[in-house]
Amino acid sequence: MFFQGSGGGPNHPGHVGLVLDTDRMIEAPRTGLRVRISRYTVRQDITGYARPGS
Image: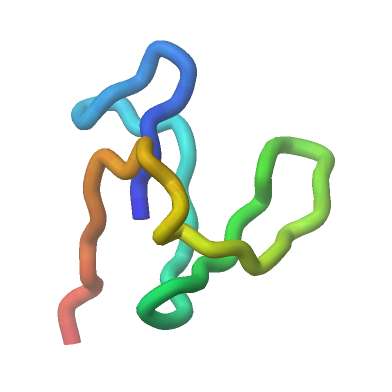
């Protein structure tokens, strides 16, 4: 998942998370904080997503 960051948008995302399932992702909230599992379905700032090829 790609999220809008400060000054970012669809062409310049500011945050990235790795999707685990239909509700959760792995993310590092910002530099210096611990990696965590959080819900991406509650976020309003999703700008796009990609699925790696098989």
